[in-house]
Length: 289
Image 1 (spheres, helix red, strand yellow):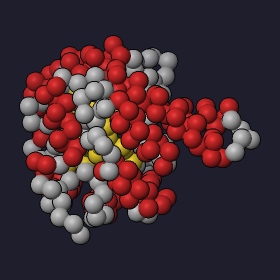
Image 2: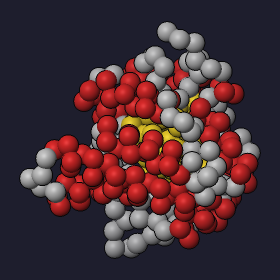
Image 3: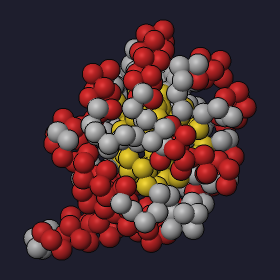
Image 4: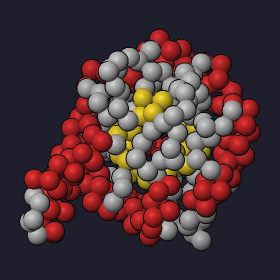
């Protein structure tokens, strides 16, 4: 196993620390297939932007190490900074399994938010240490962000719990490097009530812990540039995007039904790349690599 860089040289943290210093945020793209991975890297290179490729534990359950290794190769060989992150890893066993894949993940979300708070904190602290020993940065979710996502264990029926600044402080004490606050953001569909974010809550969390952890925005798919700007003003440097990219692939498949598969794959990749580049301009990361 090739030695991993110390955490100070960790790809994910280097990308996010520069974003904080530069006053922009970085798109973190939720990828399910090789096309979305390639689209993310191509967008990053075309826009000269840093980026993060996100996989869910589903990728490991579906393809073993194969998709992870392909994603790591694509990200780490890019001509601009691109890191590989595992999102919503919801069991201690899977966190350890992922952290032990050589030369793969730069960061892992140790998502124990489906446990009661005390167990969440205990497990998170143990898993953060496991990741750090392998040069991998760690993310956690204080409270619980409402809703669910494709490829994540079914937690949509669990009640959302908004994060308090005090809870954020408790999670920082576990040693995490990234914190994903719940401040009205929702995984998946926002439903009839629409987008109702508590920016004051985000600001209070940022004032409490933003000097020690990088803040992560989940549930950002339907947001526009104005909402992103407000979240970035509240300290957000990592923005997770799912349907805002993947829907473009699905729409391309519908439009090109019956065409040669290679052309469908290429057009789908191009459509995702265009969408990703738009996020890079909205978040201010374009031209920053």
